[in-house]
Image (cartoon, rainbow, N blue to C red; front, side):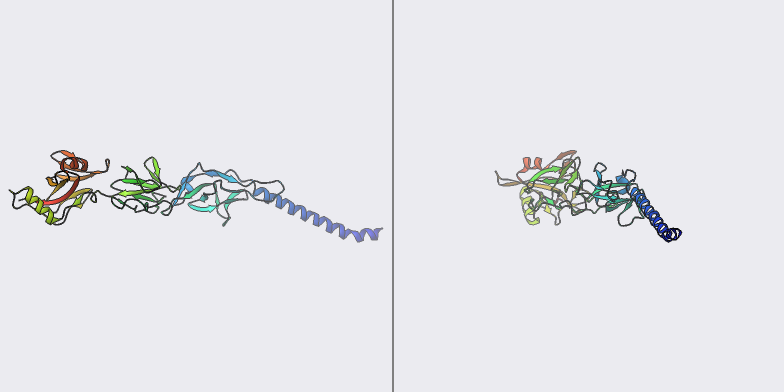
Length: 312
């Protein structure tokens, strides 16, 4: 019996060592699983995490994976909306994973975070710059400004007003606002509303045509036979600081053609012609009063043209 006992002693010792190692492995696995399944709730912060070129909304929900007691999966967080991606510290990361009771990046577990936010792209390619079927006269495509530190989404400026369009390209509305910002929905934010199709309104010069110098001079001499030196000057109006001015030595006149009488009439001179962004139209100023294109059409005729005229 003593011999048998001695012969089994190494086997008993080996068995005990293996059991101890197995318990240690199980305890280590339990701890590791616990450490990657028990991270604190992640906070949502757009200010700390939103990347440039993206729209972030604290109301966009986060979601975690469903954990089962018998599995060995670690906790992960991603955006509930599949069209959004998780962002951390100004970078899109897709998702974060729990490790050692801390939220870490998948690609670099040494980087930890306590907050994140869901982000959707709003860069220059997200919103349309124009409508292919929009009228060619009077409107220009948006000159889109890339995202910056000041404005995270693409934006545009229209100093003379914004025009919106329906899906078929027909003119929908004229807006007095001068700035617009792209949203992740693919629509432009304008004031308190949104429009899928928007373009900048032109200054109005394309709707106020310049009369050719030779034709202008001929008509003005016919209208003012007692002023032989009257003439039209080459080089029409130029726009400076949202106003129309003529070359030095000449004044802006408006000439109108009346279809019923087939005659031209002039109305001049104006003190200045200035763009009014609130009403999105040119104002013709003279002796303290303002006139619009509609006023001129009512007084002069349906066809209005501008000319710079010298009258000595």
